Length: 201
Image 1 (cartoon, helix red, strand yellow):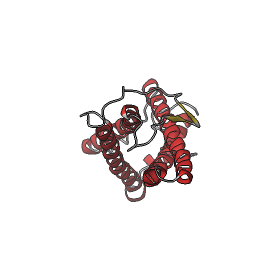
Image 2: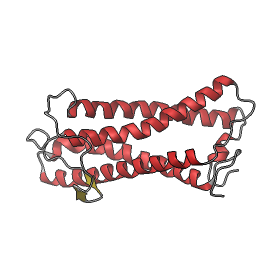
Image 3: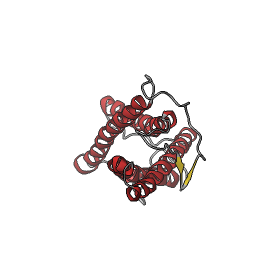
Image 4: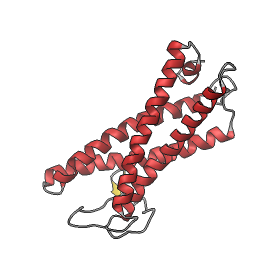
């Protein structure tokens, strides 16, 4: 069933949920690897080639993730959202809604802040050439903000730090989300996890 019902998520919502999770894993792994090779890439051509490939994966994956999150939000708003179990206390209901709201907000803000960080950074000897990759092509995706002076209040330092802090916040919220899902499934024996599980009903 493609559409959601009041008791279960449809196949579109399930597919988007798990594809987004897979993209998040790829994005985090490529982001850390990109950061680890950054300094060496400025000094060694061989490392620079490898770094560019990782950057292409990270940038492209981020833009695809951003588009999927917008689509997922639109799909959710246009359809039915499965109801929480009737036995849920008001605290549990509020906690679930708050966690989901924060996850959606961070899924938008993390890639947007990364896009902004790339946009404001000019080419320089200190940071090298700035690319905004989409697959293997630079320049297809336009900057979201104009270039700023490196010491500007809203320059690369601001958006770069914001990108990292939001990533940490997203990691914390994601851990809470996973823990809560497993708790409800394993301890409280509720069917919430199965509603989103592939093939689950």
